[in-house]
Length: 445
Ligand code: NDP
Ligand code: 2IT
Image 1: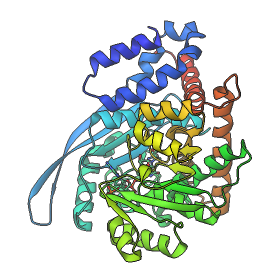
Image 2 (image 1 turned 45 degrees about the vertical axis):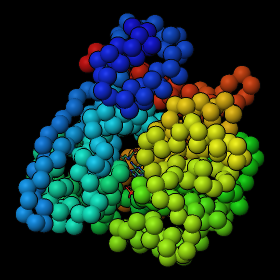
Image 3 (image 1 turned 120 degrees about the vertical axis):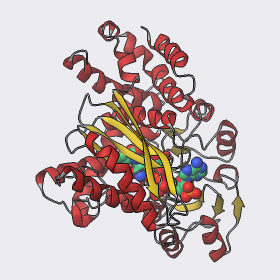
């Protein structure tokens, strides 16, 4: 089948999975020319095999809350592709989680991991459990119940989960603890672990820092200095806060943060003291960004996203999928925004992407720009295998060179006749070709 025929077929078979179809459409429409140059791929029905996950585990997770009520959530693990290495990808805990969202994330992860230069296949898992408002004990009981079901399908050389929305160091610790107990092994299945039990330095920082490193690579192609640039960030979780930290170190001005309740604007740019407050608020007190706005008397917009609320040179969406639409993209462009680099997975809607590409600004899709997180996860796996731990400087150096290499691959496959680099096409073609070659070499599985 041709790439577009596969897409039509998937639309017919999975009509209730809009996020999955959105991610697949973006990839298939950009790799079509490359695919058509390889008739051998069609013979092996490679595209269809690459779009449909290898397998999906779904299960009920029952746990007891602090009041003694029995609660039930759904749990999932999508093992999308292990063509180039063990299944690898995060776990998301959020009330919105469903099979479509996890299928889109596992699909994206496969291409992202391919770009990292490391040997990792693609996977994603999660639950519609929301850690918001839950006590530590409730979170622990949930994580334990989730792993009692999942543990038999994962392992250091088969499938290695990590964090994502709603899953940070605390949740990984609880899950890894139960995994180790059930599996009777301590080989590092899970990345993002605590430093005391096999975690890697720089893993918490890696996605945010990596996105900034990718941005620096893009800016360098135009000779632009990041210093004093106004940067709008959405979200205030792991990715957003470490993005802000790196930007601050480089002298840029972070003019917004947000959460699912609203947006705070920091007109003159966040200070180190203010950022420390956000880190503590989010990681220790698990508070809301509104409390940060109140503490420093900053403008706060309930229910709003940053994009139309503040002028910026650069936008780094770092919260969730489809959080930046066509209208917001137009507003950003009208305000002079010249670079967008995605910390989140698929934050820009297809309409927003069209606007960015038509305006020929620097636009990096998540699968390239946010690959620093999973890259350092890969480095954590390498350290675990060696029973060694590397210094922060060593890991940071490797992260920088991986992001530079991803940028190089995007440029190689994404440069258009007029010199404009289409990073969407570049990332998709580069990610696809490696996985496709590995699949061809290994036969029909
Ligand atoms: P966190 O849970 O640490 O933070 C998520 C942030 O986004 C929070 O501020 C949260 O607000 C906000 N958010 C989540 N869902 C929504 C929603 N539906 N609407 C509006 N705001 C929302 O997650 P991460 O920082 O780890 O993840 C952020 C993004 O980055 C995700 O797209 C994730 O897939 C991606 N990513 C993460 C990596 C990692 O290493 N952690 C690696 C690569 C990509 P609230 O607290 O109110 O929910
Ligand atoms: O979307 C992502 O790349 C992640 N959530 C990180 C995955 C990982 O295995 O570190």
